[in-house]
Length: 405
Image 1 (cartoon, rainbow, N blue to C red):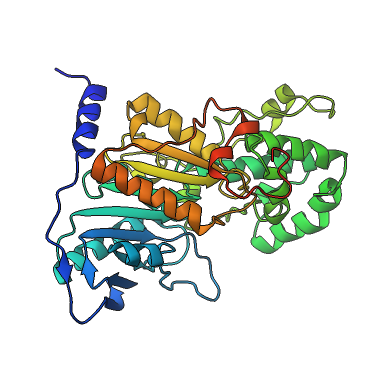
Image 2: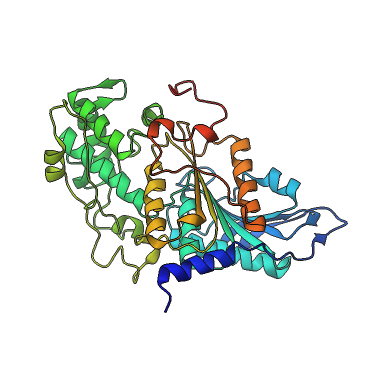
């Protein structure tokens, strides 16, 4: 009987065969645009006058409360897609917040509506930004065959790993600053502890205390010391501190968090060694029953078992959705025997979802050529390339602060 790895490889080879072409759809009336609400989620889709059968489903990033929450966002590739003859569809999701288990179904339901109203696409790509990267990669793992490719930018490609990172960040801040942040009884108390106790004890970027220098060193290692992380840290320095409500119904994302596997590191000469840090920092464990594939697979460990090509682009200096998530998911695909289905490109930039359209468009075109012609595009070896060299090929306009220019 063939091994699971061989079976996955065989399936991968089948997926990479040229995609069957459906007859193009032409309309004398110009592009078709429809929008409305489907299963409690707002949506919009656009079909060019000469549709070639390709469909891109856009999964947008996290939306908190405030202006624009719950609205449909156009696919940032919309101009390129129209030019190339591809249709696209986007959902605003049925809720705000981080409910990936719902959003996966929202995207799938909209695709089904598109098929009923327009027709069967010859292939479908799921395009995820930020949180939409979690939606995309979990969709591939949990619903193999639904999508023939995935394009993920600045994405949460390692799923629950994003929450582990943010809680590890906060736990380190708590221990080094000497302020019990994770014990705050409510958000108002949490904010007071941060502003009135933690910031004076630790400082801020450019004005660190001795404790602050320790904390920045720990953060550097949490971020794998990827290029330009320090330039982006001021934007996320306080926002990455997470508040955990107590005595309330908690979303699965928070309930599944684990920092038990995190191994902290710190540079020498700062008055704190890694052994003491790892022994004394507070660890966060999942709540009983959570982080289980049986209970809620969206917030369990991802497996790396993908059966369609994935193109992922990511800024090295992203301190909100860190580049290290790309490394973590690469290891999962290698363990699953599916590493050949994942191409990753690093862009040397201190931001989150701030790609030039040229970078995004080229990566998407390369993904389509991979799917249709079997031409696998080049990418970065995110595990073995020295960080000093990471992403040079895919950064056409170096950042002014990039010393590798």
